[in-house]
Length: 228
Image (cartoon, rainbow, N blue to C red):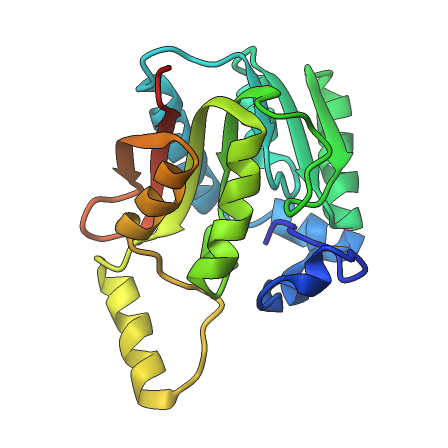
């Protein structure tokens, strides 16, 4: 899991449920284990991001990878010649990402930042990627707070992953929750909800890609800021 907000953040204390913090990778051991996860899963997820980038009408140059976790997508975009900044809060994740970027001598920066209060000016980045985070946020209000801040620092394009309700896996999770009452750390999000949040920030949906149509719940939605 990537990072979102520190429990010591005064801003975060006023926010909605923060259960996702339990999955923050502060320890180096957890971060290293995540960076060596199953190669086929990593390859499939990076292929999804690449498809989204390839299908953009024009490719933005400066990007924020928020949150960047161990730097998987940051490295992918930097290897495509893009100017990338990756942000996270987990000390272990940041260390792994920084070492990977340094080892490959990439044009990328890895910085510590809180997604609820990013230290960047309005529209500072042309594009922004938010990958494998939203499904850890438990409520529409929580998701809206994050999306508002992501949109604030983005001038043109936002790529954001989510778990669609329309897949066998999502259906099983919903049924299990209904039968057992147990909450899941994998929260599904209707695309209509994302469209509502982004529209309020001046963005329109231009594409929605599934990792595997009708079978896999992981989607990557592409939003573009309205033309003036």
